[in-house]
Image 1: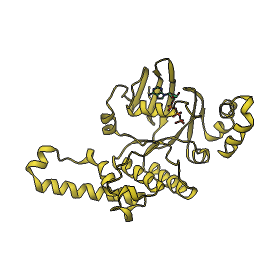
Image 2 (image 1 turned 90 degrees about the horizontal axis):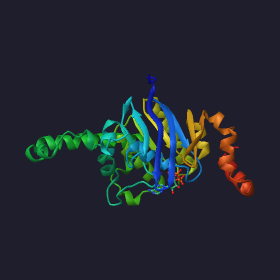
Image 3 (image 1 turned 180 degrees about the vertical axis):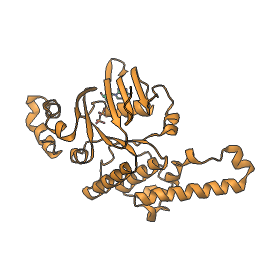
Image 4 (image 1 turned 120 degrees about the vertical axis):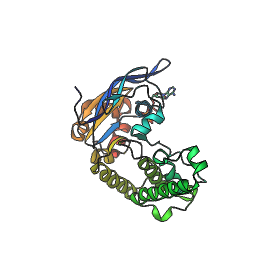
Length: 272
Ligand SMILES: Nc1ncnc2c1ncn2[C@@H]1O[C@H](COP(=O)(O)OP(=O)(O)OP(=O)(O)O)[C@@H](O)[C@H]1O
């Protein structure tokens, strides 16, 4: 029986690319209205795991359940419609669009005017457009970018582009948000802003899974963390358990030969 507060379950999910097992029997439970970290060294299989959950790639074996329903073979758009939304390591934004237009694209699921509606009812189309714009503005306000609504995306700083990506994802009104390296390239102030923003959303019921290399951010934000290495889970627990887990420390340290360099890298990520 599924525990009522678990929103996402992966059961022995495997993804092979030819002879390479990118994700190997990954099992994890994500609690509703929590922030769950998915971490691991480069090539551990984290982005592939996100692709599997969001449907951008297919599972080789295993099962994925969202709100108790199997979504393993559901199309990506159907997963978005059911409340699963993801962002990408490099935001996929169209430079020539304005900030407001980009966020409005996240609203299309909630816009009830279809093709026939827009052809035969101009009044209704206008009303829907006004609703879309006003909703998009609300999400821009949440991420603090309302003042830049008319700016072309090309003119934004890297940090602001990330915020637009978050606003667009939030505009789909997901129940589960998958954030792929959301702090990469952000300065400490921007990172703290994103952290506060995410905490706020979780307080309002959103569930977040984070793939992240910034350990300080992960440790400060996540209730639970799953650690992968070479496609497999090597640890799963609270931030305190993860930070002291010998398997995790060994995975980040690498071989004894390059231990000195890796230990410095690990310390800079504040895991030890
Ligand atoms: N489409 C693909 N075809 C073949 N191999 C792939 C494909 N996608 C990922 N891989 C391989 O699967 C493994 C896991 O990659 P993945 O990108 O999921 O790791 P990651 O943990 O997200 O890494 P990083 O932190 O560097 O982004 C890597 O060895 C990668 O080269």
